[in-house]
Length: 175
Image (cartoon, rainbow, N blue to C red; front, top):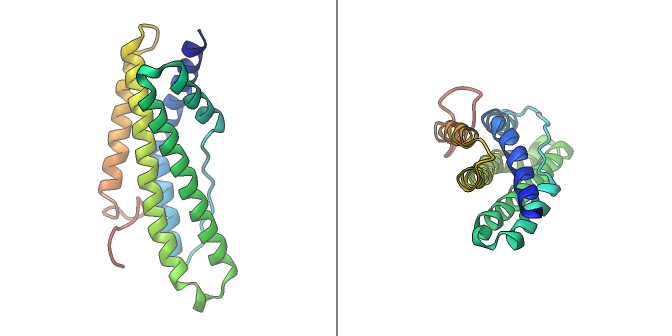
């Protein structure tokens, strides 16, 4: 019973988060682009601690699929650390004079790229859990998992095409 409740909770929250994946990827790209162009752009990102606790609990409650839940927890924690590092770089940039901040500006640009990749990987783990849950139960709409996979693929393609459309991401490589 507890397992089913927790799975349904992850199902609802993951399907909502995945909807915003492409726009979030774009926004992270805009942050890196802004700082590489000597502009300021402040945003906030969040990973629910409750989702992490639920996924950790499901590692115990659903040992057959523990690897999926554990992988999500690892990805989400990496995402959180990536955002924290990006935030620290931005704070440093805002407090330094222009002559001292060139290296930090570049670091922000490349950390934003890394952060986008962390988000894609975390989202991949969410989609895999949605697909797993859709295949395991008749109560959950399988079309939602299919739609989540399509949204994930769209965001992954957006990241792969990074820098080709102005304002939709960062160009990977030397500036």
